[in-house]
Image (cartoon, rainbow, N blue to C red):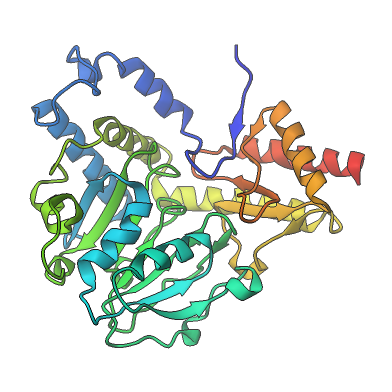
Length: 362
């Protein structure tokens, strides 16, 4: 039997073992039809049922209101950095952006190609360790939308509240913490994510868009870059990533078996507490990056006393089956991503290794 490996990578991330086993069983014949999901037509009744099931699974788990459309797109969340401003900003118009990390800056750079973007909060100067209070946000009432990243994967910073746009539509990148807790849909106009963390494999993005936002789209766009065309073609304006959508449906089934998003939220809080306690009780040997009040439950970024020890820690961890712990190149250090599929056992194994490593190398 192969050894147990716990994948702490930020994405593509660990998949639930039960999902992988089911996909393995169905790889050659999905639903007993004698064909793989990778070879059936996306226009077939077989795939129509898969697509409908994936959407309904997301709706059920996240309690998505009827006035939101669920769109499956390719290009990941990074394409949404461009599609959002392309669709909603016309020349001379603006949008508000909150910057709390690497991916917020990426989204900002793409938005600036489309308009004069107003940055209403930027924590770059302090190393992106914090999020703003609602009272810190001077929202422009004429902004076409307000954009922020709910959980910065690299810095391990997570908003602990839903930003109120004060009448301005809120657009949120939830790539790293979607499905980890319930969503208050009343606060949002658009929620988008890359799937490769909590929803499924890489190669698919999911956009939840409130119906009225389609009427706010400016101008005409190339078909595959126009949300109206994606909606009108039921996410099949071109051949979709059929495999990834199928896997999204399996992940949704697994999450329902686990007790749903509410149950996962409690587990995620407990897993994160184990890891943060190990950092906080290390007498300074491990140093967390994010301010304590905004620490992410999904991505835990920390440093050892030197970059050399950071690298040694990751090498030795990998040798015992704790994989993907190297921090992002922009921040360095160590990063443990503990998404829904990461079992408590994986976090406990990492905590034990941290204790042993500190004793041997402290």
